Amino acid sequence: MTGALAREPELGAAEYKAIAGILHDAARITLGEGKVTLVQSRLGRRLRQRGLSGFRDYLRLVQEDPDERSTMVAALTTNHTHFFRESHHFDHFRSDVLPELKARAGRRPLRLWSAGCSSGEEVYTLAMCLLGESRGAAKWALEGDVRLLATDISPPVVAATRQGFYPEAATKAVPPIYRDLWMEEVEGGLQMTADVRGLVSARELNLFGEWPIRRRFDVIFCRNVMIYFDDRAKAELERRLVDQLQPGGTLYIGHSERLVGEAQTLVRPCGHTIYRKAGDLP
Image (cartoon, rainbow, N blue to C red; front, side, top):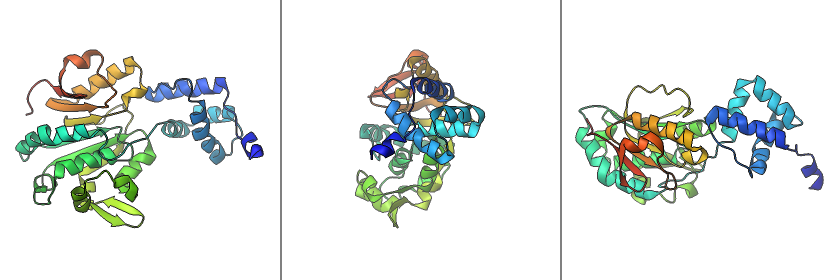
């Protein structure tokens, strides 16, 4: 074991600083002190896969190869989520927002966005809340112009979202009535049914890059994403998110996050880390 540990590439202070700079430039993520072990572990795998002996060689590769740079950023992105995480948001969605969406169904397209979707538990929780507790009650959404967008900077988790497959243990928080209706047993676990997956478009997106998005959203979930950004980056992203909402649209952020900057003046709080944009839904 000692010999194996000795052969692991060592991440020096200069290399760590350079990696942190690349991550901030690419995704505005602030990599603070104390993350050396995490970075060394996650990128050590890439070194082995690319046949490199040290982090200096890896940094040269990242600087020369845009694809490897993107892979590095994705590898250092934290993807932790679970079904019905921070459940008060979904309670509010069902009680306060969903009736308004149903009232507008058929009059115009309805759009919802999970920004920083990780492996999809959030967007599929939202989809199940939208569809409800019977297939009859779900017809308005399944047969209407209703779509959910799920985006993340990491290609592997976007692929996982498209697949919509989860080990059985990961679905324990899903109410049985939802699980019976909107999930099906497959080898090794459960998969979201085809009609639920059909509501969701999963796409790779850097929140600080271009947004090739044509429509405004009725609902945006961007939770536990901004904890990795400094206040300047938070203010920029929050303003863009609010601008992307319909008048009267609802923004949900993480329980430990807060609005900063100009976005605060454009919304009103309507629950814990829940905000409604000024105006009425069209």
